[in-house]
Length: 302
Ligand SMILES: Nc1ncnc2c1ncn2[C@@H]1O[C@H](COP(=O)(O)OP(=O)(O)OP(=O)(O)O)[C@@H](O)[C@H]1O
Image (cartoon, rainbow, N blue to C red; front, top):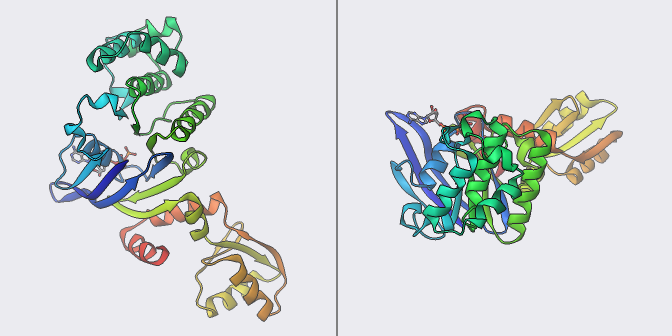
């Protein structure tokens, strides 16, 4: 379990993270989603004791990260795969970690096999690794101490499609076994397949949070009719918010409500369905687009 309460980080007058609160539960993969510069990395650095918060608290397994004895045995962290010591070989990086955590050396070979780094690759210096190989090494390092919690910042960066699929199934299995996973990304489609819960951050503030299913419902209903412009007028007349999208009208309510309004006005529907991942992405783009809108949507959706 990770608990973040009223976490704030200011750099000068700028709030990189602004009064952020959320909980990451065991047995689930929680996606931490937000555009570049939204504050994800700063939040994760505060959770892992690398950046002191201006105010607020973050605890992992009930304690601040820095207060955990032998933290690598409890929390696996991957923050910046690109920043690993480039002069060491992959095997050396893991061996050093194993020594520091008091682990058996056999764990190093197990982890190399798990992340698909060959013996030859493991004996090369990290400086010569591709970003994808560094991510695999970073995940191996995070898992080395067999932790109950994983905090991973953009682990899919640099992985090829097969690598992304591999990582998803690894994280799924880890959460299914009771692990707690917080996984950040700036791309919804990268994490929506694996995430059970989503926390969305924009300009340092949480703009939406909940299960993927809840957020999907909040994304609304897509409807097409024989005369969309006229029907949009009826929907707005009923107090609903309507957007014309390439896929049809996106309405801020459930399908039954839209169907009833269509029946009242004898409108012929050609399509009526729950909004899909495309609409969810659209909603996230809007949620994180600007402060004024974020505030409104936040109030409105929750
Ligand atoms: N050490 C620092 N000093 C000053 N400003 C900083 C510092 N670290 C981060 N910031 C600022 O805080 C904001 C949030 O940055 P952060 O790296 O947390 O975002 P992010 O969501 O992880 O983005 P990305 O996906 O690009 O990594 C940005 O405006 C960034 O410029």
